[in-house]
Image 1 (tube, helix red, strand yellow):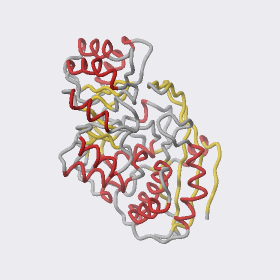
Image 2: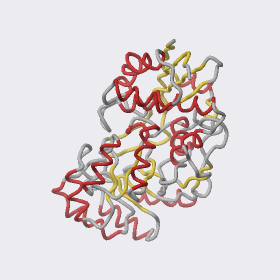
Image 3: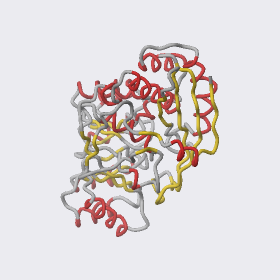
Image 4: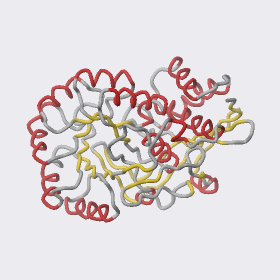
Length: 369
């Protein structure tokens, strides 16, 4: 593969509804859209999932742009590669950290590679599923009644799993009320690192509610305290923010820090690294699911592709575009039918990027050759 051109675009999309977690509330989504082109004019697409502020992790839109422009893109343009795995190895060998920036560039190359090979991205990654089950993530609302109304609406749409964001003071009572009304729905809680081991008795109460998992209850960079917590809970602990690499996953599994892992492609540094973690977890019979970062349709397409791999056995967060955006930047938009998404069989990500819409939402762009 020889990349002729890379284009970075800073886009901003307004969310249909505010999305609140223990970090705070998001009203819109700023992100970097990456396009890579070859000599034949084919384009590969991906997006950075970094946020404007360093709340989820240390990366931001601004730092990602800097790392892409000054370090990663020059590496790509100055080297010819045969496969995206080579790019991943090169980026990780030369640049520390900055996983979301790496994932954005590598993901665009994966899309282009799949198109050059006349494969779907899912097939290029080794995916075997033609449909994937999906759930929905529900942020912290103004009232429990509002949460219950949303669950009811999403049940009618067929979603397979419900994730409720929790934090101290918005946890046991919420889960208890939901279970009173919906005793049998697949339900999980996501704490986004809002608790400490001092809250272990409160978290243990959640064992009474038949949850699929509690996601990332403790510190964002911890695997030691999570091992202590998991040993005292019946409910499986799922790690998200703590898993940035294959080594993190290996150590967490060895310590017994979790029974489930959430893979976010941006968080772990790209599709190549996500596949390595997938293979490790499959070897140890640890189930996976794919988390979301309020992606546009381009990022959702990458999530769909990675979820087609065999060990993504739990419904992920890749909900329909219409739950988040008045209009998405892809054609067709991501849709959900009876709680499933069809994995595209056409080349690359399987969706066309709508350049007119991209132009409408672009705040700034730059071309690199």
